[in-house]
Amino acid sequence: MLPALFALLSVSAPPAAQAPTTPQPMLVEITEGQPVTIRQDRAYLLFRVHRPKGVPSFEPIFLRKPTPAELADYRAARAKAFEEARPKLIEEREKALQRRAEQERQGRKPSVSIPPEPSLDNFTYFYPAVANLAGIRHNFPLAKGVPDNLYLIEAIPGDYVLYGTSWGTGPQGLAVCWCLGTVGFTAKAGTVSDLGTMFFDTAKFRSKIPELKDETGFGPSSDTPWFLIGGTVRPDRRDGALPAVLSGVAISPADYFAVGSFVDLNNGGVNRLGPVPAVLDYVRGRPIDLKSGQPARGGATGR
Picture 1 (cartoon, rainbow, N blue to C red):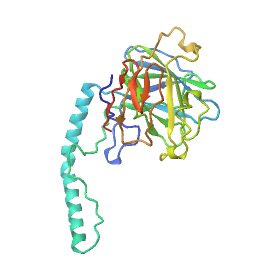
Picture 2: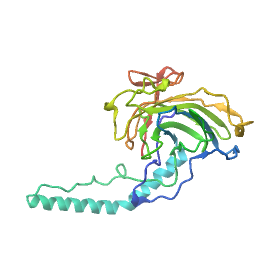
Picture 3: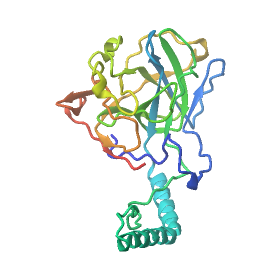
Picture 4: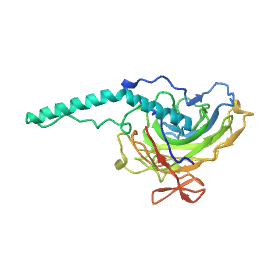
């Protein structure tokens, strides 16, 4: 289970004032024509994205739960950065207060925004050392197919969450966060985990994908800054045929678990991942872990 989710690095661009060094990639696509070599210090994710004709392209976004050491390093780095920035933040706030006071003395309507008193809790910080949130590019599959593309991803081992989805074309980033319920899994070193098949479509219109019939067709009221996205996963392998490059490679089905609701303020829309047989369901909107019959555990994110 994931009692708390914590995204150290967003898929969106960081503030220009805090230009990061390039962190080690969390996920690397193994594309068509590349050899497949299973490293014992890496995990591998195998999955299909179902896209029948007329359905837009979408890209899944995964979050890896930070290790205790990564969290400790992050908190120490953030505290250090805050202490370095604090004098300037205090100065900027004092200047804003003085400008506002001057406007009031002149009988003018105050137009100066006053920043909050600087504290570690409200300090905006971009951490450059660790990437633990990443999307998969839709046009780099291991094997192209109709209607399913097959993807193989080399990953840092750890606990993962299917965190959200992006559009395959147009603005990139977290177009929808599965903040109202989703699934997670453990990616083990030296192991290829089969995640099954993923289904995504625009939630505004009724999808032609049967698995999304109850997760779409909501009309214009579902519009966010972008169209809201609906999605779900089927853990079973829909097609046992695999490309020759995977012959002789041992593949294990992913052991999905339910993840409850969590908070993310940096997204284009919020939705739930549709029910996943034997893993995730909802009762009056509340995500339920079908393996235990109890409400699914979620957590809070800090991004």
